[in-house]
Length: 277
Ligand SMILES: [Zn+2]
Ligand SMILES: [Zn+2]
Image 1 (tube, helix red, strand yellow):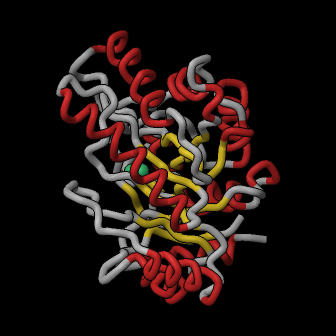
Image 2: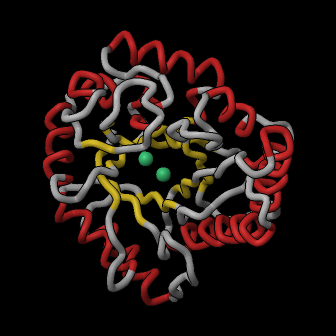
């Protein structure tokens, strides 16, 4: 498992690989546009080439693109729903242009339409997003922290989407966020707990769908239903859980991305590298 974190694209996406290397990253995550919304900055041949050569120059093995926060496939507002479809598709195209391996997205909430209608709209939305998509970047769905009606807090819910008959041909993957899983009641504190949680994931979603990890400790206890990231080893998952996760034989081929605060993210990266055998 290679280790990295989320980095900023301030002053241009082409600056991200160097910024990642300075923090000690082997892989990194970016937003290619403002996470709050608005138009995406243009990607042209110049910054795409500069980004790609930066990946090589600064020895970055993989880049993960995160979609903006407003994505909501369950929204009752047509503008938000169609905006989600079009922005996730744009991010897939943009990530492919940059040579990024994956685009990770949150799915939204069933708060407005309810579970049944919301789920049908979600499947329709993902179908629209991926229709005739030819790019190289794979779309990953992220498990959520289980607050309210947020979509994707249980492995069953993720499985119902990823393994849906209408979506199977699109080969969706999953980005597993340790903090979100823990907040939703999946224990990760000990080797036994990690084994059990991964077995549950395998039985529902399938471990072959797991393509990346968000490595975040949790400020709140197990099943706390709160999405609050803590520095590695300082939260309720703790050092032992992370040592087991990053050395787990079944997770050898996926990379881990920190989304902890940047005040100590360099230490988090160094600490995880130290825990890695
Ligand atoms: Zn996320
Ligand atoms: Zn989170």
